[in-house]
Image (cartoon, rainbow, N blue to C red; front, side, top):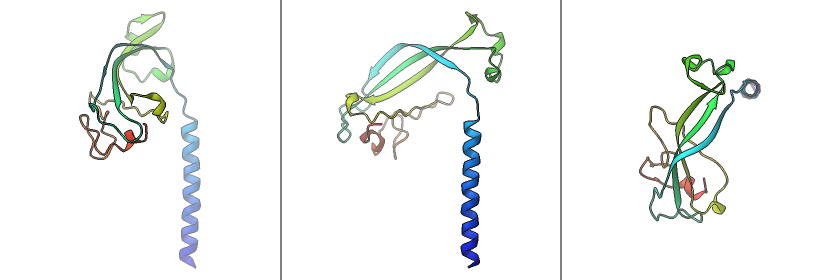
Length: 148
């Protein structure tokens, strides 16, 4: 009987903590950074003619995303020396490399976007999210065969 009470108590505590965690995440404000365009785009076939389930082949789009942020937004204060950066119309301009991996036939996509934020240039896409995958291999291709 004690064991059952302990499990019930732990379950209630877990639900309470999960609820509190959700409140914390919902309450976090977000800074506004807009991408104004993509430039220097190249399209490749990272897996050649390999077909994944009913989804088919994939293509990879590598671009530079250009955008701007407000240096006066308190949420951007964490960006080192943002107040010293040159401004255009009061906004600091930025650019970042992006990689978009998508089915060649978008009608076969599951419309879920999987993105990778590189850390010091170490990308995981295109295959790093699949078992046995890497930047050069799709591994088991599980996510690809789902249309992700």
